[in-house]
Length: 261
Image (tube, rainbow, N blue to C red):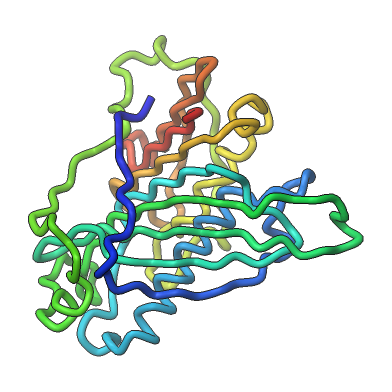
């Protein structure tokens, strides 16, 4: 399972970006709870909206996500809206840690007429500034100055949270192929971050005790997956959660863990 990872609260002096979104019927599972892939898509959308609306599009337009941590404290539900508050938690010269707080606003509807608590999801994203070719690049002074207010960690380092894959196939509890689709690939010609979540959601259907409680999902994108790659998944599961490794042509590209908090 994933190692300890603490998500810090927003400092009073931190600059934040706030945006509200309406959840769609395609974002929810049969129980009306917003799925993890929809949350990952929200994190992607709010990041792009912040870049466009904060005045730094010319300075630092290109970013890639190395890790998303998603803590579902209370599930978001459909129908409803979600308020996303985003702020910078830690910086370095080429990457930052961005915190996002998602607060659900249930909407009265005949589709889901019962009382629903407002959802709460706490997330953190490790984001790398890159060139148009995808190479790491220094973050501009203007961007760092604008988003560093209230930050004490200015030498952020990458440290994996998820465990490495077991050395022997016998240690996995299951292996499954993952059929890639043309729609899984984005403008940057690699598998989009959101496209990894369907097999994780399928596994959660088989482990309902996890989502019945507050739970944490951690996904780490280690290498891009290109079109026409052959993708497989390897699994280790226990009563508290599971870990999955995505392998493209035999090489681990992405890891994910989901466990109860």
